Amino acid sequence: MKTDGSSTNKVNPPLWLLAELTYACPLQCPYCSNPVEMANYKKELSTEDWIRVMREARKMGAVQLGFSGGEPLTRPDLEELIAEARQLGFYTNLITSGIGMDEKRVKGFKEAGLDHIQVSFQASSADLNNFIAGTDAFEHKLEMARAVKKHGYPMVLCFVLHRQNEPYVREILDLAVSLDADYVELATTQYYGWAFHNKEYLIPTREQLANAEIVTKEFQEKLKGKMKIFYVIPDYFEDRPKKCMDGWGAIFLTITPDGLALPCHAARQLPGLELPSVQDHSIDWIWNDSPDFNKFRGLDWMKEPCRTCPEKEKDLGGCRCQAFMLTGDATNADPVCSKSPHHQELVDTVEGIGKIAGTPELEERPILFRNMKNSRKIIKGESESELVK
Amino acid sequence: MLNDDVNEKLTLEVVPEVASTHRFQWEEVQDCHVIMYPEGMVKLGDSSAEILKLCDGKNDVGTIIKLLNQQYPDAQVDNDVIKFLEVAHENGWVKYK
Ligand code: SF4
Ligand code: SF4
Image (cartoon, rainbow over all chains, first blue to last red; front, side, top):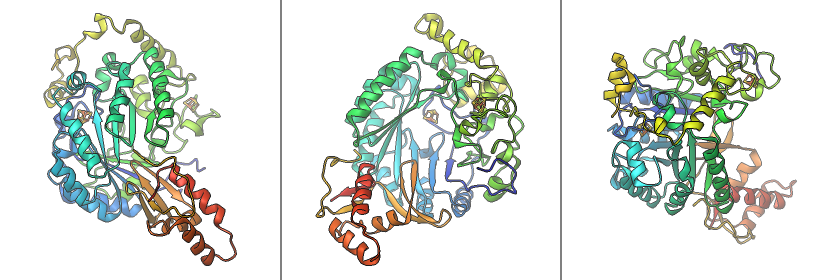
């Protein structure tokens, strides 16, 4: 394995292009990973820009293309982008809440060449789903999931798990079975963007996770060969971090709605990045030569305890964003690691939340819903406690 | 569901076909064939790719073996084809028609 991050070594091409088409979204999930300052970034790339980005990334070797956001359905040129992507030979994934779609559009996407639709749900019941989404979305999601199957797409259902819906994993998986899902992704909330502001409301308890794991195993056994269920225990309950994004600048290329290139969809918040724009640079330069994409590539950027750690090739020091959010320095070891001097702090926070979970002290704190109004308030620096929906 | 026919046995009469939910294609940059599915991809070795090329929904397994044995007279592909198709089916890459 090459250990040098400099561009004189051969860098593998990107495999995944994540096209965040917009920050607009009719939903208001408090765990949304979009930046809280999104109201500042309203200028979206044009259709022509996106087509150029896709062509260049495809030429370099990218194969998987995800259209996400925000809600990608708010882009009226989505059909056109899908058609172009398919014609370029991408495997095209639409990552959506289902709001903004009807059966006609599902059919139209198929004709344009869309390969797969991932529909996200907030919970297994209408009440909780609609509360978390901040809008009455549940019935329409069910309808859209059925339409996706009807039109012959493989269907992934995605549930982002946190303390409010984690107790209902059984109901969630029953729902997935009843909708005939091909894959279910039980995703873990990641604490950046809006989720960071709502972490007291979202962090699950150890008991919830243990229970969810047992239920998931039971379903995985039962549905072997019929439905694939992906479930990963959040790493802050473990003592080694995950190899985040399979490595910085190794596989993933994210482009934000306003055209910035990021090695991971949360990296926009990291200080010290130059955030190259696709309007100024080629994808080739961004991927191979830009300072950002080389910053944490390989192993050379590491400090202790990672630098001399025998496990460094295994997890590459974990998540840079988590390191920054929790220790204030993106070049530190991910504090999930028990070798990190910040590890105990993280354990204390998580255990502390576990102790008061379920009490009004914790559960009745205001939730910061993800919407442009709250984003503008944050930009203006208004105090967070006033930011209820 | 990935496979409605998980329990179906592979016989020489079975007609395998690349699943409509998956895409099998040549990748220039990777210099190999790949099979793609929601949010994932597997790179294929040459012999796996040769087998999948023949999984067109018309050839049965017997025919696929015969064609490959003709193409590569020095190799005895029978077992390799069966083994690969079983794995491919288990992974949902191919359907039995
Ligand atoms: S997480 Fe929720 S609010 Fe954020 S983009 Fe997705 S659907 Fe919209
Ligand atoms: S010290 Fe760094 S490299 Fe070693 S296991 Fe911990 S995070 Fe990974």
